[in-house]
Amino acid sequence: MSYLPLPDNAARQVIDSAVIFQAWLKASAEAQRFAGGMYFKREGDYEYLVKTSPTNRQQRLGRRSPETEAAYLSFTEAKQAAQERSKSMGAALHEAERMNKALKVGRAPNLVVDVLNALEASGLSPHFTVVGTHALYAYETAASVRIEAGAMSTQDVDLLWDARKRVQFLGTMKKMDSSMLKVLQQVDPTFRRIDTQLESVINGKGFMVDFLRRMAVDGDPHPFRFTADEDDLWPVQAERAEAFLNTPRFEQPIVSVTGRMALMRTIAPQVFVDFKRWMSGLDDRPPAKRRRDRLQADIVQQMLDEKLLLI
Image (cartoon, rainbow, N blue to C red; front, side, top):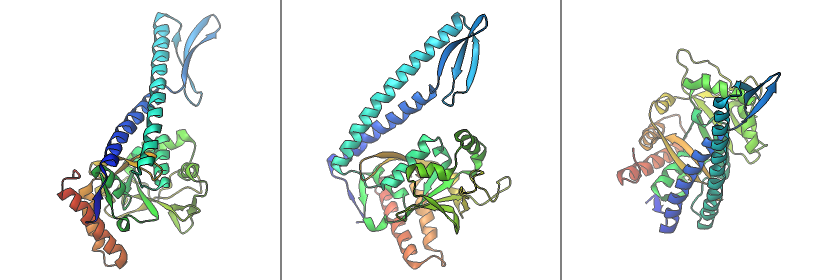
């Protein structure tokens, strides 16, 4: 068999920590809604209720009145409650991750977890889908199994960018006043773009992050660089990528070797199987990679057949 079930205590910990992680994500998102603040500001003879953003942009909401005072009170009470909830869930997550490490329930690379969390924190995660070998970490976690190491080894992670949402993506990047390369360098300062592969970055230990996109269709900018920064990445067109974008995503919290967690958004298991079968039949693909493609497809298909995963 190409995978083994997790021990019962480890399997229970994976389930429990996933619940806590999802609750923490929700609490964090709720707290983020109240980022910034409100206060009353005097201008001349009047006081106005002012709302501030995290970047200190200000919006005047009206003169002081029973209505604006009620709005101020409602905001401050809701903000305090959201912050307390986020802090409480953060403590629970810290304990869950400590137990993850103690019980050795995770084995996703730390760097992959860090990259996914950086995308989540920056608001960019809805624009990217993990494709390729690293999807196996989501599948094995969901199935409470451990896939054989030979099927998992790879030194790069593929992130598919959704060109259909480019307007929202560009808006987020403009608000951040950053670049995709700089987002990754916050995770690992040694990341550098590869001059001969403008869609890829590589760190000081040889780990790569590759950015893909669908084949250009009417309306898609091509070629496309994530930002105006001259050092930023240019996602490369990939065959069959359109099929990944037109099917539901598979979302699963994954656990790193040190117990830390991240939400992986990847393709549905059956879509993965079909893609790997196709890859294994490409004559111009190296034989070793074709063999691994077939192995990965067989493993995920077996998990589907045994009802360990949902299609």
